Amino acid sequence: MSTRTKIKALLESGEVDIDVTVKGWVRTFRNNQFIALNDGSTNNNLQIVVDFENTDPAILKRITTGAALSVSGRLVASLGKGQSVDVKATSIEILGDSDPEKYPLQPKKHSLEFLREIAHLRFRTNTFGAIFRVRNTLSFAIHTFFQERGFVYLHTPVITQSDAEGAGEAFHVTNFDLANVPRTDTGEVDYKQDFFGKSTNLTVSGQLEGELGAMALSDIYTFGPTFRAENSNTTRHLAEFWMIEPEMAFYDLKDNADLAEDLLKYVIRYALDKNKDDIEFLTQRLLEEEKQKPQNERSELTLLEKLQFCLDNDFERLTYTEAIEILKESTPNKKKKFQYLIEGWGTDLQSEHERYLVEKHFKKPVILTDYPKEIKSFYMRQNDDGKTVAAMDILFPGIGEIVGGSQREERLDKLEQRMDEIGIPKDELWWYLDTRRFGGCPHAGFGLGFERLVLFVTGMGNIRDVIPFPRFPKNAEF
Image (cartoon, rainbow, N blue to C red; front, side):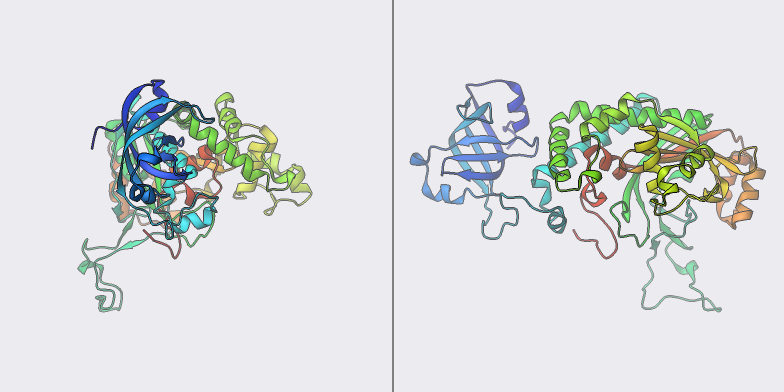
């Protein structure tokens, strides 16, 4: 089985007049003579030329779209347009039949909505082949970036007692028989009888545990699944998604922003280098899609230009207070074009505001810092003004916020005071507070939603199309 050569390697080798064995799935079969074979290593098909006069008609009949084949033959320079080499088949073995009457992926254009319904087969299309090869490259690039800088990859728990964001949108974990839940004398659920002896949930973030690692190992990062039980049926939300969360001891807010900018530039450059063909294909796909939109809704930049734009520009850095002034005085705000009007300081910025700053005002990625403490999490370091915290968000064109982070509050008294103000029970986070009691130090970190990054690099419009099997309200198929 291992004697095959991958199609990508064959097409890139430049070799001809050699004997090869290739294996893959039939995309099309024309005139009983030309098979377009694809094995997922590239979007480019390999043309197999069949000597149909000397091939068993029973075999020819079974060469249908979706069928899996093993083909041996001679790799020769192609006489046809559109490909550099062909394989003149000397033997064809059908490894798996595909009934053309029932196979849902016919050689025609399918809508993304339809492909979501058959997510188990959509990998076989050019669009999703390209997306998931890019996703793979970005994943590898993230690990490479941190490993090259001496970070320790830390696995934080999927099942946890803490809700790091304090948003209360967590999935509960239990082994109770839900038809017969044990109760206390006062009628409340008796979690002491549950598997972990207390109420637990799927993690919404590995950050708090990541901080514990950073307080001994200096620089750590997590890269794992996180879960939010938000009832959000939008193009930007998933119930299960992947997060990259580095935490660094002895870092301040500027160090944090520098690292995040370096990371984003590194992984985008890596994908452009390793997945040039895939990104060019996705750029063309997006151009075709944009033609259906009114002129004023079309992007000013192509996908390739947008990625290059992020590499060529230093990210603009400004405070939340400066951003509010810009937005308040902006034409869309004055003409009431924003859905959420900016009245003044303290407003939580929406995606439309973030995109205005990036796409219209600065025309480059933006790092916003020093947000009002009321709209940010309890663990963010309080600034001396008593009003703001040392938070940062990185905003990208077409997507808004892609990174959220902060310098963490290392002062025990300030952290406890903030927890009391918000009503977070200190006894439940005793272990987190211990890192401030014993050798606490300035430290910082951020979270990068992996699917948001893949969405940006592939130019896709719906987050459900950049994760293999999306989880969202009323859907856990496959």
